[in-house]
Each structure stands twice: as structure tokens, then as C-alpha cells.
Length: 82
Image (cartoon, rainbow, N blue to C red; front, side):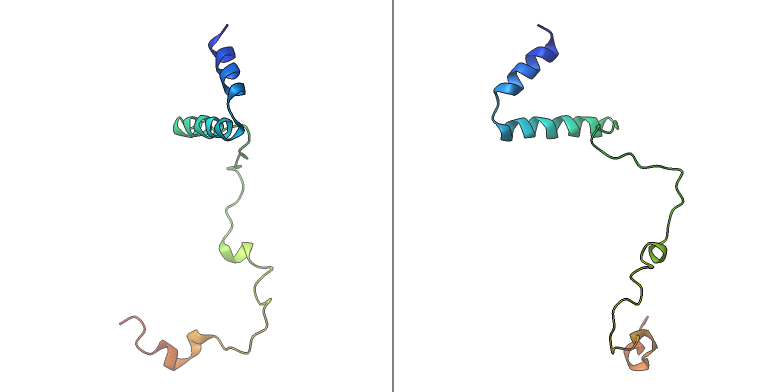
């Protein structure tokens, strides 16, 4: 019996919670050596980085409010940066 077969047989005997703990430990070991696990999504590095404003453009101005922009209120900005 190979080491892998022995490990699989022992893992099969464990309760579900401990099997999940074994999986988390294996994922930790993969992370430690810098190797992503199969279930993690690969991030494409060739994509253009987006600013927060570009990502949030659909949400800008979506809330109706009677509040003014506080940055234009002189009383609010009094003493700012001192």
C-alpha cells in the first residue's frame, strides 16, 4: 500500500468535521509553498486595474438624499487639517 492509499484510508475513517480540518490543513500547506489549490479561482494578471470610481460607477448617485455635500460646508470644514 502506498503512502497516499494509507492516508486516504485513514481520512475515510474520520468524522466529517475532522476530514474538513484535514482539507483546510492541506490548503494551508499549499498556501505556504505558494501553490494555489484547485478550487481557488486564478486571478488574471493581464486585466487592467480599475479604480474604485470605475467599479462603483453604477452606484454613484443612486441614493436620493436631502443632505448637501459636507465638504462644501464651511462650518464642517472649519479647522480641518490643523
